[in-house]
Length: 51
Image (cartoon, rainbow, N blue to C red; front, side, top):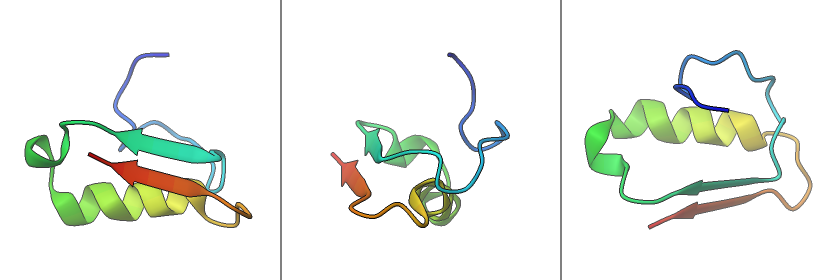
């Protein structure tokens, strides 16, 4: 799947892991981090990795 994760209609909690490599400087950090948090919301043991 290719697309913008900020606008794609994923349901909250639809991911177990979110990994971001070399992207922070390309987006609004607050918006990006909030969206990643929402995608992991309600996932027991959900993981977020930012490099």
